[in-house]
Length: 462
Image 1 (cartoon, rainbow, N blue to C red):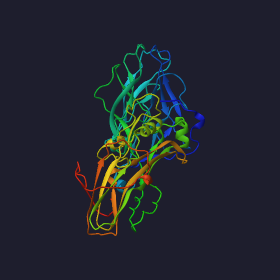
Image 2: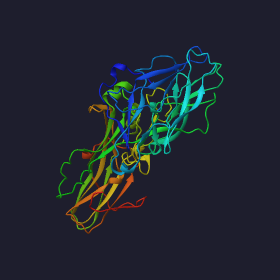
Image 3: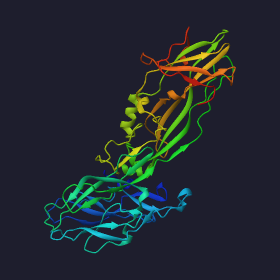
Image 4: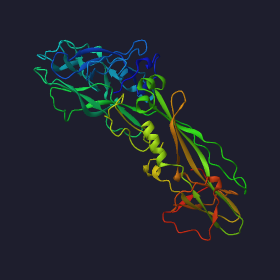
């Protein structure tokens, strides 16, 4: 976790993450429960999240926070807190997202530790169908109140394992050993984000727990879509008219903790709780030809790819976002406000079958057959990806992608009962610097024998 500037924390109610009827928000306000002063162990302390009732009414912690050190963590740590949301649509028949525990069972007591205050660590016992997300501490021997935390319905979380050690009581002289461990989320599935709430896992041992199940929160990445642009059609033998500009067709919303920005985590949370990754699509002209003869005739063009592997690497390095796989590579990496794993939708980044397209910058050779006395044109979908903060300001660099599977052929005069064929092939030479408008079509005497199966295209949009 990283330090944050308490002056940048939200002074207004933040939009929550919604997953079913579970609402998730964040707080940086805590109450100290206990620390290890006087015990002879390494420095450590336990804290209870205390979401501000005016900013986060109805929100509860999921467990307490274990920290290495004695420093005041208020304004310097961020953890998740939860609230019951309204049931909507298909979720209307489900039970509540949250429930208090039915009881607590003791995990550790610091008897004979020599610490200045007593401490007991408890494991919440969830009701059937719910899970406990972390442990709860008391500065004495009494059980915590049942209303102190909330358990979460089991279908709203994801099972995971423990991460690195936070603190243990070695050297304290306590009758029972104890160690507290981070909870790391598993690698996210497509279209989802898994993230640790900031709680900890604890055991009566100094050894790393094995075969122990912990839980992380999960969410689906919100996505908004509008219809794709209409495919252009030839309306004459002459050069095609200028195409419409690109329009935003899909937007995914990524929470602040899953994006690297020059802002601090506190500034991200307060000014840009969600980042918008926009995909703008447009058709670009690959080539146009007019067959004035009385025999079918092939035309050949080069389709230049817009993707640039170096630009993709720069985008990922600046934002942490990966287009073709889950990020970050190591969810437990130090320096992150929230431990998480995120994975974009594969169809959002053209990775349904393979991510290799993002690394392929060679142009395609396109061969199209034009019937006698026909004009033909080949178009291709090109997408631009732009990351924006909540206020619309641009983050990092934009990157482009040309979809090889979106090649579209149109002819004039149109014939709905004819089938036209063209064969895309990888060019053997490196991509040239010429633009689409500078590319000339090349007449060839015979259509080349394709090395792959020939694509069949009608004059309808893909």
